[in-house]
Length: 211
Image (cartoon, rainbow, N blue to C red):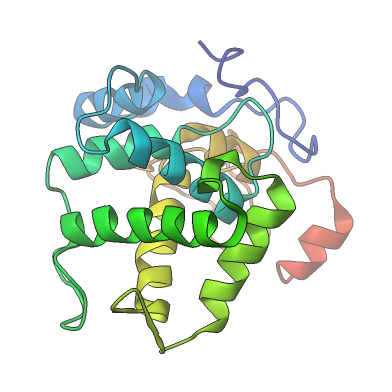
């Protein structure tokens, strides 16, 4: 399972030998089961239609710069979340309810792509997709298909980032060992590592983190 999901290493080898899943034995049962569910996300979409899933998948790849496999299954995680109606619990009063906002915004994204190129969003090359998204972001608070563009952008990025960083493959990339409960941490302080943590070998990134 680890190798299939690309967890055995990390994209830049910043944390040599680190394996976040080796810490699973330290998590409580409920946490471990929750995280294992994220590793095995699969099956038919329950919230997104086939057309919406294609547009959303291309959108999330763009937002998170996931250009090749193995990808973190952001689309599947968000589909599962929305199928359970597990929304953020709030919304802008100028936006539709979140399920409707997803349906409307993905349809609008395809509509923009068709109007500009004659093809739906997932059928476009990477740079053309990026240009369409940049045009939406550049609208700021102006209306885009009846919704404030900045608030649509907020919806897309909130959900995409939450899904991405909820997955152990992202933790692997960051050198994050997962939930601290019930083990906890004892070496509190700047640049003090636990025995199960691995030091970042990239000096520039370590310096950017305040070291």
